Image (tube, rainbow, N blue to C red; front, side):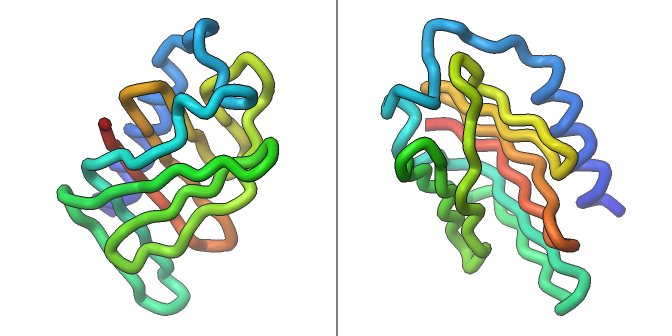
Length: 120
């Protein structure tokens, strides 16, 4: 329950944060690199629950898509495509916000949930 509330809070934070038009993740490698901070993952199907305040997410751009490689044995999030001139990805699965100093993730897919609140 605590994990769910954290994810919901993070989604509202991402949605309420304004977008920067100066930096566009879809055609700029400025956001590629490692972000450090709180990361989490859960998968109730196999009982996995991982959370740490000292984790990291390495952001890799592959073509027009991003891969998010997590530390601490958390599976990667791959193939996330950002719209041109947007640094916020919002879908029915969750939200991801990237800028040059911050990465926020609240994302669920196929009963798996990823979270991140990281800075460079």
